[in-house]
Length: 131
Image 1: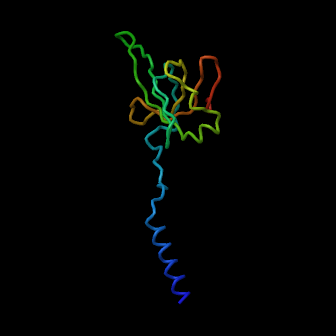
Image 2: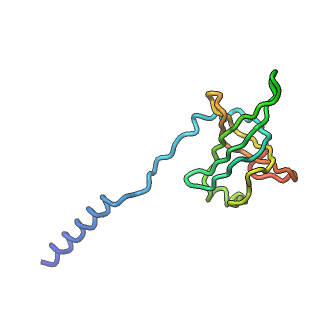
Image 3: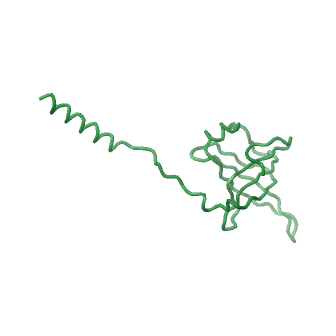
């Protein structure tokens, strides 16, 4: 009788584990970014979200054209807060209003977004891999 109970308990445990929610193992691709190209944006931080699975930055970039200067809002995707913390980042590293220069791999479709590579602060200090 004991072997049957052990077998039934094992089957029940395996069944419960099979039904338990597990984190997704898949991760989205960086194919939307042109990883062979790096551009530099200088502007004002609007928002810095320290969130999983990726932190992100919104920055307003002044752009001069034939009509004067207009402001473009860019969305910059970063890595996870855990990875950023290992690199020296904190939740408070960027604040709305900070003037920064950011390097990104731009979106392939020409949209106002990119994948973060580095930031240079007004005092000249940097975080990330400045190219």
